[in-house]
Amino acid sequence: MYNYKNTGVDIEKADEIIKNISSKFKMDNLKNFAGVYCNNELLKGYNLISCTDGIGSKIIPLIEKNDSYTIASDLCAMNLNDLATLGAKALFFLDYIAVNKIEGDIVQKIIENLKIILSKYNCALLGGEISELPDLIKEKYFDIAGFLVGYYKNEDFLDKNTTKKGDVIIALPSNGVHSNGFSLIRKLYQDKKISKELFNSTLKPTKIYYDIAQKINENKLAKSMANITGGGIFNNLKRAIKDDLELNLDLKIIEKQEIFEAVKKFVDIDECYKVFNMGVGFSIIADKNKVDKIKEIAPESFVLGELR
Image 1 (spheres, rainbow, N blue to C red):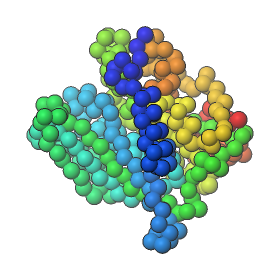
Image 2 (cartoon, one colour):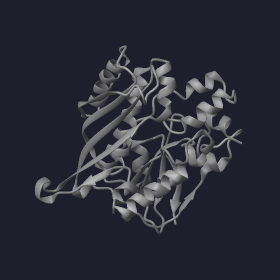
Image 3 (spheres, rainbow, N blue to C red):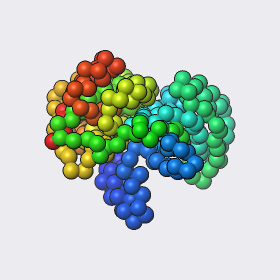
Image 4 (spheres, rainbow, N blue to C red):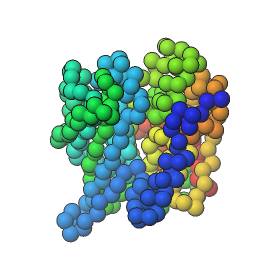
């Protein structure tokens, strides 16, 4: 059976390091999807919030396809979805691109697409940095990271400590693998365990949930939210609930997707749920009496379980 660790990605080790850093340096923000900056004297009723992310090794096949749009869209999605989990609105974005050598027009097209996509969410692209690192980055390849800053009113902050037993977990479907688990997806493809057609289907842009999250927040319907990225459904939902609560999920209700059904033939099911979103891209934790109103805003949503 295949697993993530054998591709060079050790989730458990990374979690252990993050836990140690958080404990040693008193950085509780590391447990959240985004970091919060509080300064009541300066901001007066508002707080700043920031996050940073890339798109992992999904960038490799996207570079090979010269797909600048999906690279830009995924970079926006990974950051906007994280920011949305705490009830924040986006302000501005910066990018960092590490290249072997500055050549061709793909970098320029990525920046153009970033500007266009971010403008849909009233978010400004302020600038960024391009670094030539020929001793580090392979020829014709590059890596990219995004940095997003937003804000929220104090009364609008989504606090996981408000969650309680009996609250429901409302899931929004993913549209595939998104931007996590690609080292394993690429390995399966290289070993001819999944078809070229199915592999190409995994390269579609990551779904952006920011607008839906904003509408839910504006109507005061959510207690907490989770972006289902690296670590899968369980680990990311745990980040969005009180530490003394447990998840009671009905995984059978998740609509099956071809890519995950194919992966399950070669990857242990527990490993699948640690690595992939398995059909859930974003989740909302709310009172039971809020379910119908949330479904009005997000008709594709479904109740995945409850807290106990």
